[in-house]
Length: 262
Image (cartoon, rainbow, N blue to C red; front, side, top):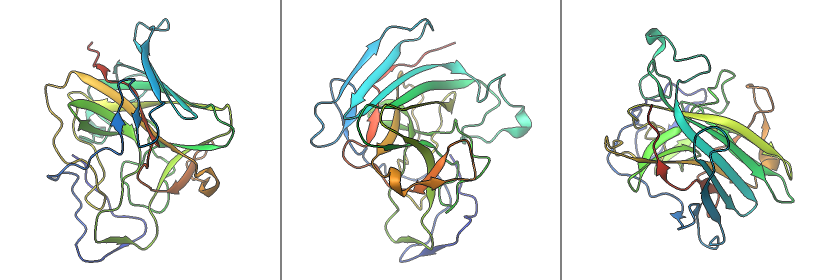
């Protein structure tokens, strides 16, 4: 479970008080339906395709999915939260994507195969609610929750909870992809996996992650709001844009696959 730290810009709450815990009761349905081909798509996107391919020399099955003008390639393997091994126990933040023990690491590439710029939301702050992306944001952090019996690591936004109003729109980070451009990255989850979602100011899944899950998938939100993004303090080409829940086919997911073990 995660907790929301104080926000950089105060939130004005209308009708309901802001709750700071990441645990709740009801789960919000995913903005899409997994197709037999493996992608997560919305209405009008039945042409998306996906497949489990060769290992590519890594010994790990490669997941590839195409949704509209977005191609997502991802693999999962046991690993630590950072290159060089896990962090010391003194730096552990349970359920926040940073742990002393080995977990699960997804390596992914998102490619814009279309003719117009796209915005890939692949830099997820551990505390969603600030109007500025932190300079020290963990690029490997992803939301972790269970969707239809599958462990999902997802880099995406969520809708604001009913009755919540922010004085300034909270943001998340990403990369602008020019036509033909790609971005590569990693996503990390502790093992055994734990629920890791934004606080109750947002509509996010609240059910605890089951202990008997055997399949995983990786998702990333990609949309056409590239022109609305602006440079962030994180540098390195990372931009920030106002948080928005995926609509239609904007949440692109790999096909469910077996969770690897050490």
